[in-house]
Amino acid sequence: MSLFADIKKNFGSFQLNVRLDTGGRAGDSRAQTVLGILGASGAGKSLTLKCIAGLIRPDAGRIVLNGRTLFDSEKRIDLPPRKRHVGYLFQNYALFPHMTVYENVLCALSAEKSRAAKGEAAKQALSLMELWELRDRRPGQLSGGQKQRAALSRIIASRPEILLFDEPFSALDSHLREKLAVELQLFLQHMDLEAVIVSHSRDEIYKLCSDTAILEQGTVLLQKDTKALFADPEILAASILTGCKNHAAAVPASGQRVFVPEWGITLETGREIPADITHVGIRAHSFSEEISENAFPVKDTAGTEEPFEQLIRFRYASQDPSSEMLWQRRPKGNEHLPERLGVRPAEVLLLRKRGFLDEC
Image 1: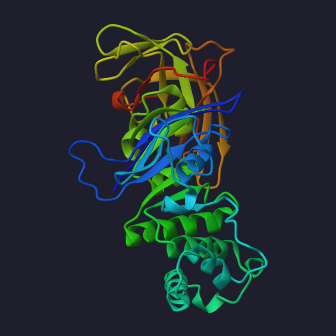
Image 2: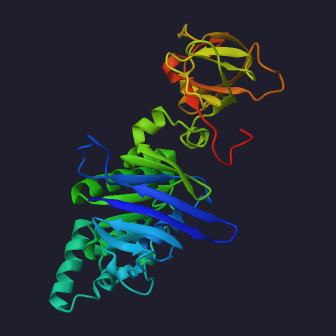
Image 3: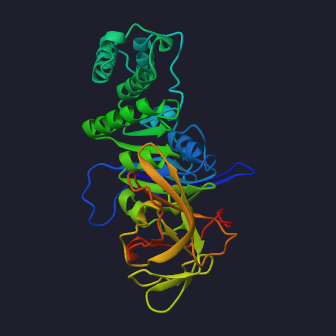
């Protein structure tokens, strides 16, 4: 199964220019792809889903699902949403409040002429989501998790070829969000369905998605395997979106080293330096007093206790006193402030600058 989308849409002050492909890469034997779209608020994540679902018509481009063309501006193909076989889970679940759960699911089966077949399909979908016993309740009588499962039941009943999730946990508290993320992961594996999940939460994307696309101001900067993306984000915007807190401009030095003027240090990277590198990043968990490589004296240290970790703010001894402090995260239990911190060469992120993060 595969989704290909290469679309453009002019919204006046905002331009959408997106290219996504879940067709897999050479040597990739995975049967199922869950594609994450990670971006800040206003990046165009929801607009992208609406174009795929047929709720917004792109100005130009193509959308192809499993070899079936949903949209092609040149060939003037634009299938209506009901013929796309795309399941779309909205942020607010879009359940009809005056209908029961059962009636909400029946709405997805309007094309089915047989009343008996409709009822059986609705029962199967609700049973799969463990909601059959709640079929006579209205959405206002359901918990947040039950509402999400009711919306999923309605989608499943329509037998989609792909599922689109628009910030599926944004309206839930943190405990329920984590619980439902696990349930959704198991559900997608059980159904063997491809999905696209948009989110601004790196944790949700990392847990649920096999591949991730970074979206910035309407443009996909890159798409790659999720774990590979977090290990090597390549682009400054991607590094920030995946949670790296420490960045600075850098220039290649001799050998496999980079000089970081703002920090006043030269870092060994253990690999060839790309010609287009503009920045380095170091994740807060990468710093350690136990690491002798890239170890430099630090100053202006201050510690803050968090529930399960300790957060250390510091500057390098050679760093400009007016520049931003860096962050280290470490397990609780070591209360003294560090005098030197090191980082392994492989954990120095080599980044190039793209897009709106010019001042970072």
